[in-house]
Amino acid sequence: MGAAVADRFAGGVALVTGAGSGLGEAMAVELAASGAHVLVTDVDRERATAVATACVAGGGSAEAHLLDVADGHAVDALFASAWEQHGNVDLVVANAGIESGDRVWDTTPEQWRRVLAVNTDGAFHCARSSVRRMTDQERPGVLAVVASVGSVTTLPYQSAYIASKQAVLALVQCLDLELRAADAPVQVSALLPGWVRTRIFDDVRRGTEPVDDLARATFAAMAASIQEQGMDPARAASLLLAAVARGEFWCFTDPERAAQLFEERARTLRELRPPERSGWLGSSTA
Image (cartoon, rainbow, N blue to C red; front, side, top):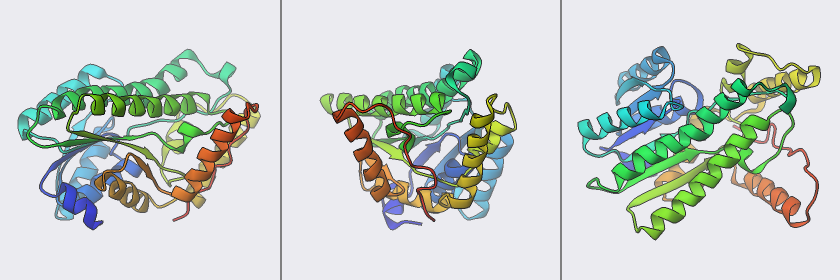
């Protein structure tokens, strides 16, 4: 548990989406251990309940809620209820996200729409519903949006995911400018985790495997790599939340590696290079 997180959020209320497993779960657990009352939300009610129960068993305070962030009306209803019940919500972490692993022409419209609905629309729904309430509450609020280092990279067989995360980063950057122009008391943070050991690939593989042989092999390799080389979720959550608590806009699990990826991206755009596969697999260490 980081002292900065406890200093910033102890005694407050935090809402985390996609908190039923992985990074979202780890952030919910850390926030609860740091003294925040945590609203654990997830599209899987059982997962959310299990995490909230674990937070309480560890001495923290938490409650579980079913939430599909792709449903804007559901997000707004839950946020309205949270503000009505608690008066203030000090931190919203828009973390929910899903993956896909097909070539563009093998991706169905339904697959494409679902990835963007969860990853991009979900971030928008959380931003829209939280920011307008935070501007009217008694104390400053924070919106932290998980964008991923995928927001500044390119990879084959990841078009839906990469497109969704690049859009999320653009959304957060524009939102930050708008909030500063309005002199609104809301901090916005972009969270760009690297390789973190989660079940995001496993969840996809239990559904539809990629059609193309090479795409399927690449996706399987990524699923294995994230388990073998990914950063422990608790460590990643601690690093990201500490940066949020310090008031930073850019929040990383591996700042040095992120800087390399940013430079690769800048060089590609500056020199008008054709797309190159970004080498970010397995870049995070525990």
